[in-house]
Length: 177
Image 1 (tube, one colour):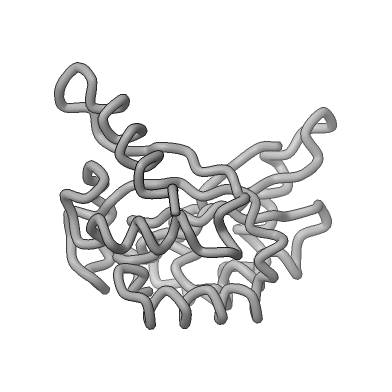
Image 2 (image 1 turned 30 degrees about the vertical axis):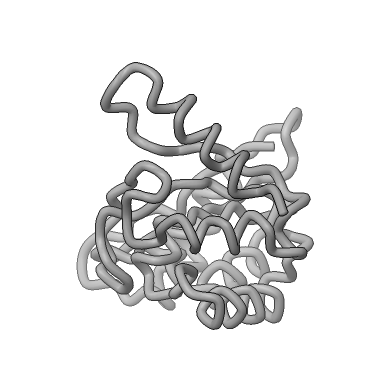
């Protein structure tokens, strides 16, 4: 599998106009014969980035001629306006993701907290529990029945030696029931 983030579309092009001609072509060129399935990662939605809504991600998949799966990034979700930090917000987000993407197509979770608040459209990763998703938010995410068997990849900043180990140990403790 290959993974990529939808490209930035520059200029005055509307997202809907740019998606078929530019985005799908870029995605198709990323795939190679050894890795015929690519995962599209959601974005925070800054500037002209595509992929901050489930509708945009669905559109990419529907227009591609290659098998497409998804990687959801927790920081990007929050920054794009999906309130995954609360129980109700997580439930709504997963319901919408299931309706538009089918959660079986979500094959990977990039796990990181967010330095910026809900709906900021700014992609700034933070250590687990030190940002706007918080400890309780990650506990709910990791223990959610529709997510708990999916692979989670740590994608947090490393400011000091041992940060990765501390983040990993914290996630392990939060995943236990």
